[in-house]
Length: 134
Image 1: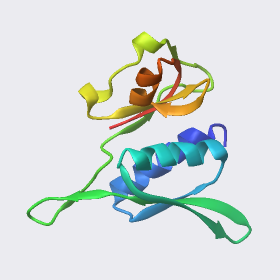
Image 2: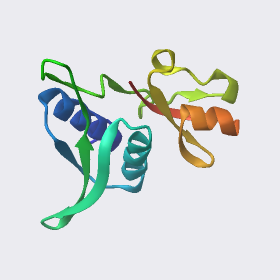
Image 3: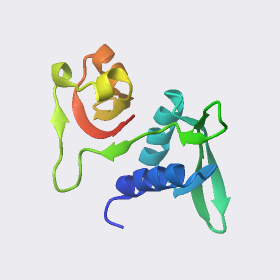
């Protein structure tokens, strides 16, 4: 696997579009922090650690919206990796983008750790844009 964060985001995207209740992702410190930020923004129900066989995994419980007819739609409409290994995208503190006019958020890697775009603006820090979620 070349990019583990892209793999995590793709697993979340695929599981939510398929209607799965949760998704398992191999754990790392950065992936756990990204999942916790997504949970803090209320885009997923819960995030927890689990051991499957010999490997530690991250279980992400997905969230769905139910309409008045009983149909379920995924709460996460889109999730996109911005900064990749071949092309890093950095922004200054005054150039942090608003995702879908404020209906989504970006995860930014700053000198003080991973933050959402709102937290980064409030702290006055720029950094590398990891992904956007809406």
